[in-house]
Length: 494
Image 1: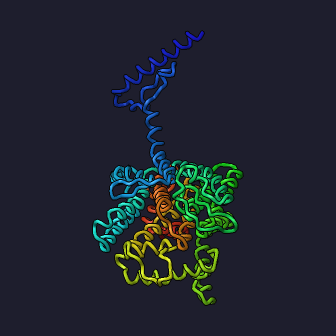
Image 2: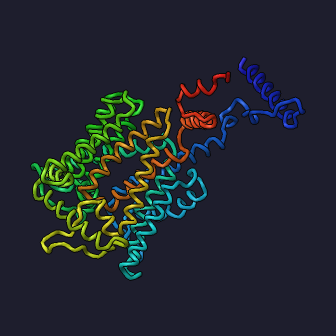
């Protein structure tokens, strides 16, 4: 019986092959074939399609490159390559920099966007600023390291994350990393010693900056508790919208618990502020999700609060924010002084900044600048600051206005905007450097697909239909949605 069935299958296969062969040269009345030759049924070898396997491998390979980068952030060893001091993540970005740049310029990740050119210009201006302040031999290492961490990490996210599926996969990998680090952070806080660094033989990287609330500030595999806290706190928006996308509420709550506990163990005011702001964004979205102009109301409300604080308090809104966003009055006062003297240094050196030179301040003040936005303007000048912030504002504006009917695309957008909003606001009270700075640039690059042709087919088709509809109505001299004018213009003349 089985032999007869197999013979019948092979007979049907030969008949289909003959028909396909005859249709290679169709008559004028015939239509061209729509399917290639079919695979012969039967054994597994006959069903093997190497092209499908290669396509699947190519689709997953870029995400693999991003996965290696995320894992390399946890390796605290240092590698000396000539004049360059390379961490594992820097070495990985250095190896991929030229191929990623060529891939972008050749259109492998969609057309080069204006946001891309802004980041290119910022990277070039940073090198020019260093050249204006130092001899060439001095800036080889810092200029190379900054270019790799800034532009290299951005290109990695830009090329490797090209769809909502890629984005959600990247978030799942990120969450697994945080989940692995959590037990070590808990032990470090309770036992008052760097458990993970001692375990991997990198005890020399450990820093002891005291305790808060009876706990050691956890740094796990990072160079400083601030970096660990900044890394894990960025995950709240990602976990809430992306990791828990199309999953149960328990998965969302579990992810939030992991991110929240990890952030708390860092005992970093900047990390806690980023977590708190993301919580506010999530709550606002959840309460007013049925109202379309909810974020316009949020923006105008924040502006109104800023004006009221400025009018009815003796301190500036920035001073009030810093006072309530830090653990102690001494820390908040120090940040206020950093802002005061830092802005004076920027206005004294507006074009090229100070480079690697020390900034002017009272002798008793520390050289640390706990403000990311202030430091990039202080070091590389106002043009660098304008290029970076302008690119980010344009990215958020275009992303917010993009039509995304597909729920997977919308979940990725909400995850990025929530996370980046918290990270950007917390950057006013903390500095991001080394691996965490590269991680943030990677995260920014991983969102560009939302404005450069990486949306799902349903989102692209609906957006093109709406665009065509608007163009056709404008051609008739109408505003989009103007029903009254449409009726009057179509009314017959008398």
